[in-house]
Length: 283
Image 1 (cartoon, rainbow, N blue to C red):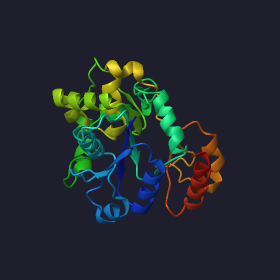
Image 2 (cartoon, rainbow, N blue to C red):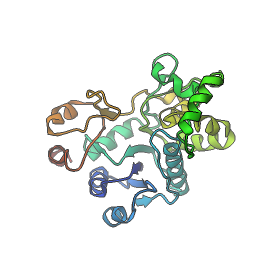
Image 3 (cartoon, rainbow, N blue to C red):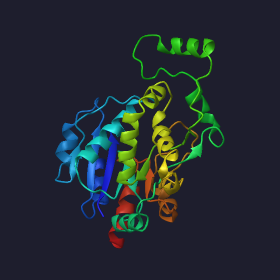
Image 4 (cartoon, rainbow, N blue to C red):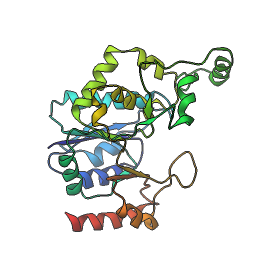
């Protein structure tokens, strides 16, 4: 069983190298998208290897914009073009880290082959704070002066945007694991149904909804678990999750998740060292 990891990153090449080394197992391949704003040289120098592929079509990622979706899609295309029969693809950020050994992660995916691990909360019923992402106009993808004033005017004078009644929008976290067949289905859907790209380009943080919704309204729905296997601590109540530190070690080890975020190479160093020591004993 060959796993593929698609990693979106913009900083901390040494942490990326550490994460790749920790995840390496049985022909695992790593596809790395480096934000177009970042210099790729340090990443290539530290993280290069026969199973590490740097995405050629890089994107200038804007927080909350469709650019995050496009970066993921570009990664999907290069994974498919590699022609390798990957069993599953896991999307991670450059500040993630595994909280299980590579052997345990491999065993888990062998036992759960074909399943889709991603959040599937109903936007209109369970995740209502996200409704405005779909019903209002968001110009985060536009690049002209005064776009947010224009956005405010549009939402004041135009009727609410309507998501197609034939589809149930779901989502939450953008990070996920899915089989290669689901990746191919998404790419083919985007080609067949360009309306969904146009719709989500006027939405906020579409990376947390678009892929989830496509699969939920497809034959893959029965394979979806609703769990994305990623431990995240939102206890600080900020727009970004808590940076995990040594005091979080026992919580992570007690978790049934496979991955966690968010880590910082300096702030989280002691925790990362503790996790590596634990993993080394389990291999």
